[in-house]
Image 1 (cartoon, one colour):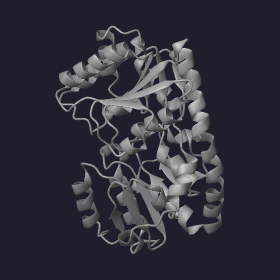
Image 2 (spheres, rainbow, N blue to C red):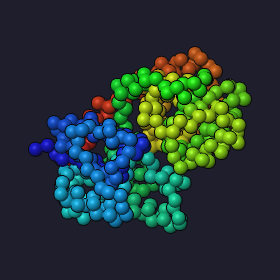
Image 3 (tube, rainbow, N blue to C red):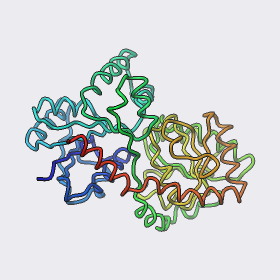
Image 4 (tube, rainbow, N blue to C red):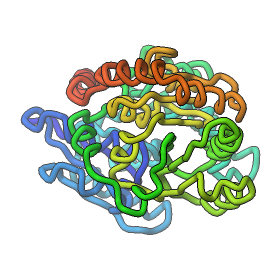
Length: 374
């Protein structure tokens, strides 16, 4: 009989972890694995991307206790052999133990946990909440059967900051469906965006949240426009949109910065850019950088645990060590004004992206999950 594997997530909202989960589960060999997915809530733009042969179940909106209990009942009924948790790790771990199933538990860690604890997007009401979560992390990760991290940097953070044993961690980079990116990048832009597409163009993508540090990018664009008449298109939505619009207006950038909202197909924008930029405070990996490279677009990114493993400085992009507007503006200007340099970066970017092709990453997951099951 095929072993039963279940990926568990809060939802399939438009984040990197959710997209990675769908890509990996879709790519796992259906003749080898009996695949399923459980969501706390059946919502999110990636629902339609899930392979229809994968069994999908979901709970209903309710309190944390109600969501936990619904998951416990599901696991008790289905009894998967391997459970892979993307986010909500301790909810999944305790629900599985309470269900008294013998499932192997795998945590998929996408971001540095220490960065999460400092993230302003998560409203830690009291300092002791952070300390308590840190303690729970140290205890809970010892109870998982294995931990998969999206980068060496995320693994290092767990080892150094939370005492997780290195031998229990497996680093498997997130995959990129290069064929899908190539197909989608050829779609035409909607007229309202095409009419504003005046080169040189910089594109950024990601949730409008504190971790992505869009204020830094907007300040950098304000400085850059003193030398280069650049336009910035930001793909994504989030709770910080009103604040970003105020900042854009205050800097006199209403005609230069375009907030495009969430885009199911970001690649048709990215492929037409002169450079792609990511100014996150921290990234566990940075899937969107690889997707930009797959489009043949040079990238500029602030340094973090994940971006260091993707970008080869001066070969396929640039990394900015100082998370300051002047440093980001200087890196963007170098790529935009030096056409031969930009062409070399663009040429190398496609080859760099192939390291993270979906088949190779799915095979790596298959080996890790097979070892956990054994």
